[in-house]
Length: 142
Image 1 (cartoon, rainbow, N blue to C red):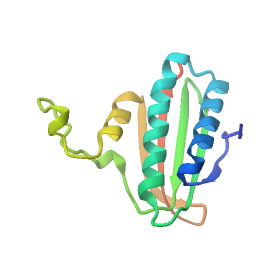
Image 2: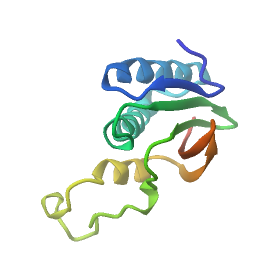
Image 3: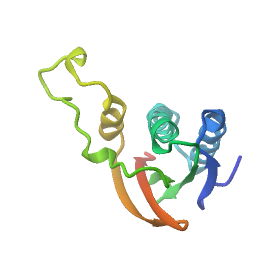
Image 4: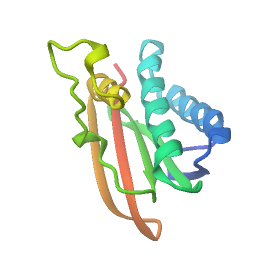
């Protein structure tokens, strides 16, 4: 397990997905995440990492991950130098009164993450020598 209390970089590739996921989950367990919250955490891990791996870069690039306890929360941060993308502004017709089949393609995972986590923040700012997408997720530990 990598200690993710400080930023750690990984290649943003499908081959590295399981390693990144396992490192995040190990850090969450060390931080005291309740077992009942692990499914929510895994949803956030999968949605954010798969989006970075699939869409951020034309050719694989790095993703940085930081995961740690912050007060009563487990905080998970992702950063990449890929094309700018704020998932918090994405609304793809996930409105009340419409069935899942009527929703536009894409965005369902981000919608579920937004509804499942206690707080989410996005910034596009200088990081590791270039502009970066930085997404943070907070999940209450109690």
